[in-house]
Amino acid sequence: MKPSRTLQLTEELIARPSVSPTDAGCQQRLIELLAPLGFHCETIESNGVTNLWACKGSASPLFVFAGHTDVVPTGPREQWQSDPFTPTRRDGKLYGRGASDMKTSIAAMVVATEEFLAEHANHKGSIAFLITSDEEGPAVDGTAVVVDLLEERGVELDYCVVGEPTSAHVLGDMIKNGRRGSLSGKLVVKGVQGHIAYPQFARNPIHLAAPALAELAAERWDEGNEYYLPTSWQASNIHAGTGANNVIPGTLTVDFNFRFSTASTAESLQARVHAILDRHQLDYDLEWTLSGLPFLTPHGTLSTAVCEAILAETGIKTELSTTGGTSDGRFIARICPQVIEFGPTNATIHKIDEHIELRAIDPLKNIYRRTLENLLSGAS
Image (cartoon, rainbow, N blue to C red; front, side):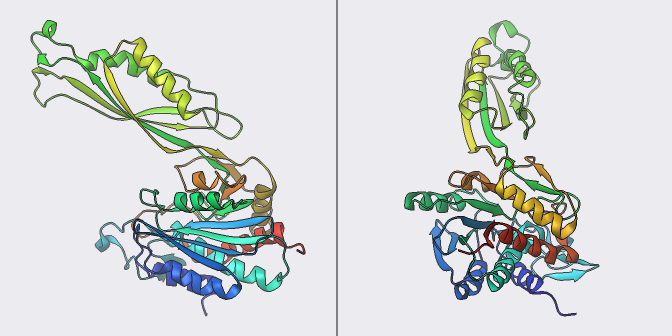
């Protein structure tokens, strides 16, 4: 049986070894497909990262498909059952790096757009694609750069669907209507090094910090809200000592992270941490890193359009969720009031033998097309 248009394009993209931040020509292939449809395609490069902004039309509302062509490294290639950059159909599945995260989504978005435009030449609004090769990496020169540029130009997005693999067990059972923010800290508590037999001449930073760490772990940072669980403080690494068992260390280093909801702000969390440390009279240094702000799209036009598309295609009543790590949605939400993430199942992402079920590929495309129809099918 001849493979579908979406499957063919997915395999073309998987065959390009676009390990982050390399694009390996994926976006050029998208330009070849989108330009004939009337999209104005702009390549935006930044420090070795390739980004694509492709837009058709100027009317409101502006609907955007967003995603990334870069993939994570393969890991030990000899552990793969087939070459990770040779798309392989086996046992009802398509194997290859990026099959789930997220080259199938990108292919489905493009083909969905082709089909939609063929049936709705006079649709209302505009359609755009925001594609980067820096989502799996530092995410500094990718979507964030494009969003900055669009903001400078005064471009306002109305709806955005990000093709992240959000489904938990079967296609369409979960979409993301927000993500928690990520705030990390590196805490260095200072003591006085000395001989363990003479503690009176030393100050043990482990002992000094322990009550404060216990308070940080027990603190109720917020209550969450309808969409988010309460904010969590978690220590990820603790290190002290010289390696000898008879030396009181001079410093204690603690790495920690907040995954925080819209019920808190980065500034409020930082202030409360400092207050706890100061109350325990610690001598410390604390370096903060904010890698992502939380975002939230409440029930509304876009979530309804996606949920109705999933229901019509699969019969599933989808769950809205804010779980998981950060995504590029955090950048897009700065200029777009409604951002939803939806894509295939995520059970094998970043793993050896990453794959997607073949039977899910065309329904994914159909859901994207139905979403366009739900939002833009009226006459312009």
